[in-house]
Picture 1 (tube, helix red, strand yellow):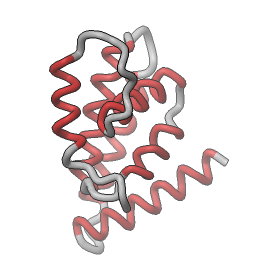
Picture 2 (cartoon, helix red, strand yellow):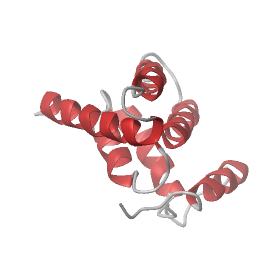
Picture 3 (cartoon, rainbow, N blue to C red):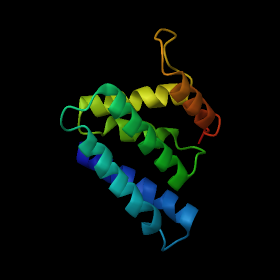
Length: 129
């Protein structure tokens, strides 16, 4: 099931890349995305702390938004998070998405600058496809 979902996700991203970059130029967007995906997935290996993983997740989300456009990308980001190869990566990306969309819990201290940065990013992202 995960392999099928992964193929469907790549097909959807390829269609979106064609719309953004133009037909035949999809690889200009897909290449950097695949490289970033591999780098993010490998950041979950080893003893990286939660804050390091969240920083990597934030960079990954920002790059994905920059490459494929912001409007209507929420379902894709959710599917990306769901298909990540480890629980710590999924948690890190989910935390970034929660803050991005204003869904984080009211509790917790610190991280003000990161939250402000993600708040600015959230204002640029449409949840509606």
